[in-house]
Image 1: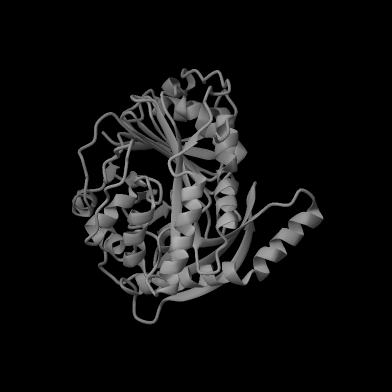
Image 2: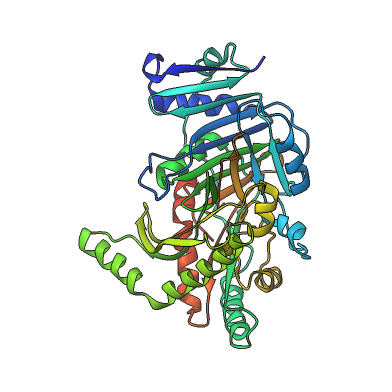
Length: 429
């Protein structure tokens, strides 16, 4: 029988941080495991992810938005439905295809009803679903040794020269009126890698603490995510989307850091990129919003992270009554910050120029509660790993406009890769 128990974290025989690590190590033994981590980034506008762990040994397939709708229509047990949406769901939303190389082979979409979930709330943790013996099992779970993973230098799927040529070709597409902006991404990878996914996840969070971090296990597939970006949340009655466009490195000194912040604030190219995506998001939300309710409470907000400054805007709208999550996703997915504008033509050109299928990168992980509230991130700054094949990879990208300088765009990709490489203790060939 499903029930919920609440424990004071101070009553546990280990520190709260160690309990979280043991809980994830315990959960990651299950075939279906999702963990959402805010890294105490509570100052993020509209708040970060909840700290939430959900696990199950078995879960029916939910490969389409229609299947997700059927799952959400079932009587709710009181807990969340958790899962992921890959970038390839674009093919269900629009008449598109994905034919590039893929080593990960995620299902297009998968959500599940957890057998047990843990929800951290302030100084307490709630345990729902199957609760008997869970705390004792978690406390008895040993932590990994924490040794630095032995990962070789990662190789580019798209050599630098090819990337630079692609940027120039996209600039020509923009000049010809094909798109206004296009997000071009590239993959770095290694093969026959053996690592402990949970240990690397915590290393990644230490290197790049982010408000929308997450860990996913789907059988032998793992996502280790340190995302700074929210795709979409329903904080009833409001839908909230917070696209990121605009990146600058952090400064080595306070004066240098302030100079970097001001340079990003005043960069006309970065502001133009951000504004184009804000307009796209406004149009997407208007498809499911109450008439006249779409607004932009913050434009060009500047927020610091460990390695970068980011330009973040907030778009919100009042959701129309009776509109469910699958319909909302059909109107808004994939997120414009990872495609460009106009969205459909941008996705067609992405398929043409990129060498790797994005998979869960540029997709989303998140959770939905029985009351209709939900929260989804943008899967960026993330590692994808297959324990059965040893394939390890990550993707990074940037928004290309006509004003883009190819070398500068490549440097931005490497800047975004910094925390991932630090967590792995390796570099790029």
